[in-house]
Amino acid sequence: MQDNPPNFRKLFVGFDGSPQVKRAVEVAMELAECVDAEVVVIAVAQLPKPATMVEVHAVLDDAREHYTAAFEKLVRNAKEHGLDMTTEIGVGHPAEQIIHRAEAGGIDMVFLGHRRTSRFAKLVVGSISERVLKYAHCPVMIVN
Image (cartoon, rainbow, N blue to C red; front, side, top):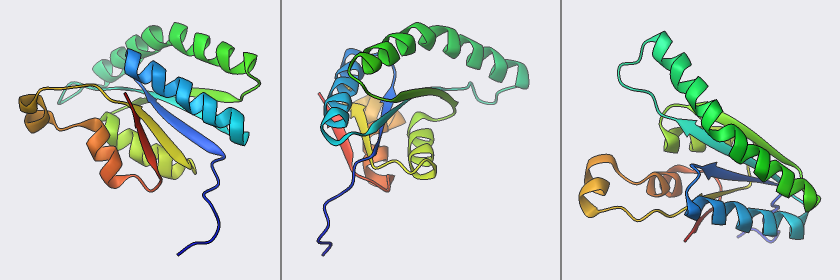
């Protein structure tokens, strides 16, 4: 067993603009203030299947337009609290992008909002938070 406590220096939030995710950002920022950590927020745009290059660019442009105002507000709020926050937009399946970018980016903890879905929806598409919990290399906090 490891004697050293986890070192939370880089926190990662999967962002979709929902109230639950906005709460997850708040929780991540509260922890970041306590441990002097950086917060990284990612939104992931999903592509139609199969996607043409034109569709990829259109989806990414729409995502940038959609998330720009929300990201500006988050970054401004983080600066007011003396925190470093970066934002990014990924393209692909949200769970896969979150898992991959968390590992590649040296993330110490992932924060997600919990959106209640029907049992049928879970069976058909699965839960993003369940996939991230199962495959992430670091601790994951699901915020209600």
